[in-house]
Length: 105
Image 1 (cartoon, helix red, strand yellow):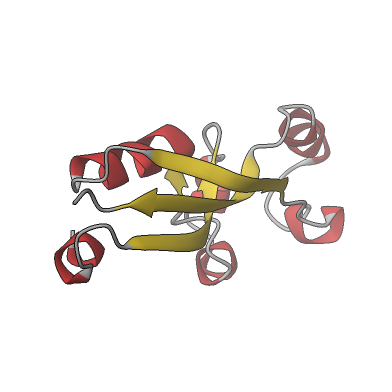
Image 2 (cartoon, rainbow, N blue to C red; image 1 turned 180 degrees about the vertical axis):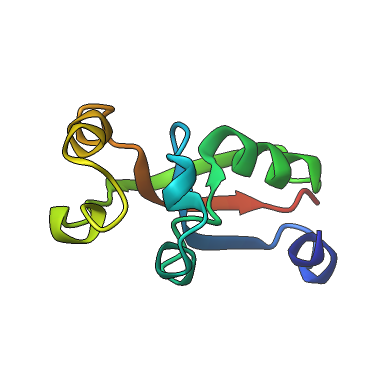
C-alpha cells in the first residue's frame, strides 16, 4: 500500500523477494536461522501477488523466478533423513521472484 501511495500515476516498481510454493515444515518455520534468511517468514507466491494487486496494481508480472536451494547440511539440522528426502522431493518450494507493476494513470 505504501508503494502505491508514494508512486506518481503511471509510475512503476520492481522488487525481488523470497516466496514459497508450498508449506514449510513447522520446524523450519520456527527456526531463527531460517527466519533471518527470509525463508521462515516468506509468504506463499499467490498470496504475495494478491497483496500487490489488492494494493491497487492491476497488472503485476513476474520478470524473474529462480529456485532457492538450502544446503543439505543446513536442512539436516532441522529435518530427519526421511524428512530431508521428503522436503527435497517436494519441488522448488522456496523461490526468489522479481515482480514488476505499474500504477494506473
